[in-house]
Structures are given as C-alpha cells and as structure tokens.
Length: 174
Length: 92
Image (tube, rainbow over all chains, first blue to last red; front, side, top):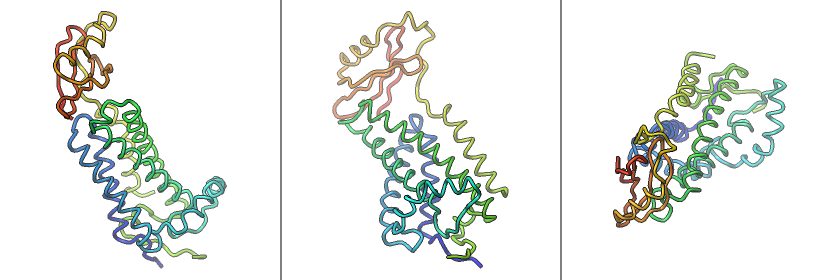
C-alpha cells in the first residue's frame, strides 16, 4: 500500500529548487546574468515554501517541525544503532536538514543580491558570507542526497523516486 | 541502491569536482614574479583617476581586481600588477 505524501506543488518546488541551486552553483563570475536570475528564482521559491508550510497538505506543513527538530539529535543517535523509526513525511534528521538548507539558502541569496547593490558592492563581509553560505549549501545538498540514499537502503524504499511520484509505502504506526 | 540513486550521487560528486574550475572569473594578467609587482594601491589610484569610486581591491589570480562604482553602476576592473594596464572590465 502506498499513500500520497508529497503534494504536487511541493514536488515541483523541490526539483525546481534543486535545478536552480545547481545552475547558480556553476555560474558565478562567468555567467553573471544567469547566476543572478537563478538567485532571484531561488528567493521566489523560498518565499513560496514558507507560505506552503502553512497552507500546503499535511506533510508540506511546518506544524510538527519544532517537535521534529527537538527529536533530531536523539533520532540521529538511534540511526547509528540501526533504528530508523516510522515516518511518512520527513524524519527528524530530514526536518533538521530542511531547516538548515532553507536558512542557508536564505542567507546565501540575500547576501548575493546585496552584493550587486551600490550600498553593499565590495563590502567584504557581504561577499564572504555569500561565498561561505553557498559552499555550506552545497555540502548540505551532498549530505541530503547521501542521507536520502542511506534511508532508502535502510527502509528498502526508493525515497528519491517518491519525490517524483509523491507516494510512499504505508508504514505501521502511521 | 538503484541506478537512479547512483546517478544522483555521481552528479553530486561532479558538482564538487567541477565547481572549483568553473567558479573563477578573469584571473590571468601577468606572468611576472609576485615580488616584482607594483603595489595594489597604484591600481586603486588608477581606477580613481579614471573616475571610479573605489570600494575595495584584492588579488585575483595574477590580477589586481578593483571594485569601482561610477554613475551608480558597479564595475570590476582587472589591472596587471606588472604595468598597471587595464586588462578587463566587468559591468556588474
């Protein structure tokens, strides 16, 4: 049995975000206008995600986020002992990853946009914050992909494919 | 893990491998030994003389990159540390 977990706007949002973050990563300095365009698209996507966190379907909403964030350290400890838990939406580690990624993307895009204003052009901390937050985003993206693959193996379910179809296997306890 | 997962993993790794090479802008201005370079302040002075409000300068590869603002527009000016000739201008 499988259930619809990720609604279609969330899925479209996820892969559009992945695409434009990917584009932005490859275009600084060399393809300035494309880099800037990608950044503005990401800002728009971040705004959408915050809104969708309130009006989206169950697993898109931020309602249980605080509890999941609190549970994240214990969850990661348990994962080290092979305990995966049963979650239809994001598990606590996934929720922590989402918050970290969205926060860093917000910092990265805002400082990126600031860099090309007359007020902040050439201001070292703006440039450095943009560089380091962007690097951190890519490191987290890699961990996010590795984490998803790890959970797919442990749960014997293709979670990457689930972000295309939106459907995940029903688990006992849900 | 299936093929798709491996595909994504391969992409992730290539992102990191490829980024270092792609992320760079203009950076070749001179082959002169760094010890013989003219000071960066000379490059800044040259940008000022050309009518730019200089915000900052830094070494980028073998160039002095000067951040300049002129008539509300943003420019990155690349000077050769060898003879302070303007090698490249990027309008931001």
